[in-house]
Image 1 (cartoon, rainbow, N blue to C red):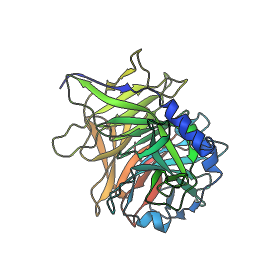
Image 2: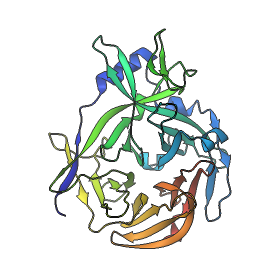
Image 3: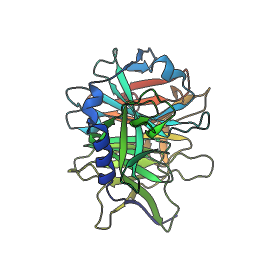
Image 4: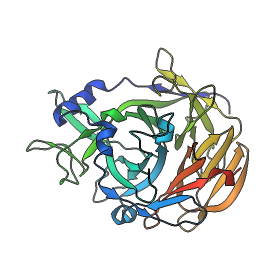
Length: 355
């Protein structure tokens, strides 16, 4: 099927995010979160990995929050660190429990010492201005199946919608952490974030568009590095006869955003050939794809390597439920995480095993 795909960038939500910062005491940004990490991960031993850890018991057992995307400070900066720290950012989506869907959130983890990992959750929100000029919060309803952190921006996959872009400097602190089922302004004053201390509002929406073909499903994202410039790589999760395409966007080195024309349209380059069923994440290193696939709750995951249409399978080399994938070039490691309750792990693997 021929045609073109791309995204249309929305206006910047500066007024809304400025208003949110105004009522919460100002932006604290990622730096504020990194100085206030409140949870401790559990070291894990997983055969075939070079590092592994599990989230704490509450997060590992949660039936509400399901881990998905992963990216790192190696994607964000040329030096691979932020404030001297090696940082992972992961995403999770919320399932509806007691008629409440809390949307999506990210988790900021300091992995400078893989044996002593500290982390904190940050709720993703949309800030909305009321007719009276007040600011309200809405949850971000996205599967958040993939992440790319590049420069100041965090891109979050949103399947049929396209992808959402956040500026990490927009993170603010909200005071009411004892209201786990409330979001936004409270009747007695103050602001709640579903029990989260920090919230991050959307800055841009990159809406999926297509001409002459069906719209692309943004299931996962990653950063592709090359001497000619960095690109955003996206792919489609598929079952049965669904499409399994890959595409890339050129990224503006000064902003970290996809390059766009004067109308805000970014045109994608579709890779020739297709991937495989049940793809969960992919990176392209040295022109070769590395792809994770899942096999359900009781089946081990696999890694596929090569080009679209001719991927070679490394069968059952991952625990059940592998998700998104990112590459840490300084150590030449592949990082992924798994999603199922009581089996949730974050893993680093030596990429040289899969070439």
